[in-house]
Amino acid sequence: MLTFEISDTARWDEECTKTLVTQCPNLETVALKRINGLSNEIIAPLASLKYLKSLDLSDPQGTITDDYIIPILRNAGPKLEKLILDSCVELSDETFSTITAYCPNVHTLSLSGLDRLTDEGVATGFQVWKQNEGLESLNLCRCVGVKDAGVQAVLVHSGASLESLNLNSLDELTQETLSAFWDEEGNVGDELVELDLGFVRCVSDDVIRALSMGCRELKILKVAPCVLKVFIDG
Image (cartoon, rainbow, N blue to C red):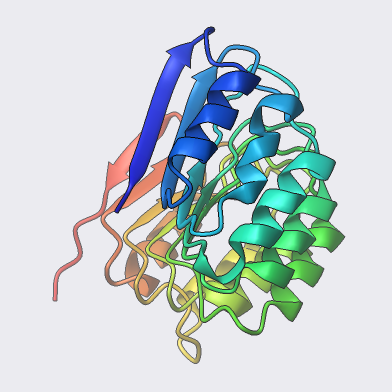
């Protein structure tokens, strides 16, 4: 797999990206992490990469908007398997709907800090994402616009396949949504190994007990300020 990764620099600019895609048009993995000033103009040339399987633009320390990320996602399309857009705070439901429309094979999706995502947008996206067979890892940490409807749609779509789920700071979730994890008639949480429910106000001792019994593979349960290592007999 042809991979390029760089992080923690202020010296990456538009010309660098143009040179990268010109010299390495078959790149499958690109990670530009914590780039000071990473912006629309700098990422725009990535839209010419047709073989992307993994893209990480986390913590850009600059402005990235829907209009510039969407062409990249459309072009990568079915080949894209891993997408990390943590702290790209200007992105909205428009980006999310593009992911669900053009990227059926994504199995790892991290959208931490995208507070412009709405409950309706996430719910609708997962409801129509029929070609995707289920995510393995999903990070919605601090996506504070996402509430019960959005997470319920996540669990209907990917609840049986998720191994890692981060719902940290989704503080309006209710126990009705979390009850899917211990519903004996469903298969939500069957593969879940790590679950982050930090700063989710509805979490109680009873919820933790039910989760530990309902999710048989669960090893790590985060309920800030604690991290519980769950050991289940059987």
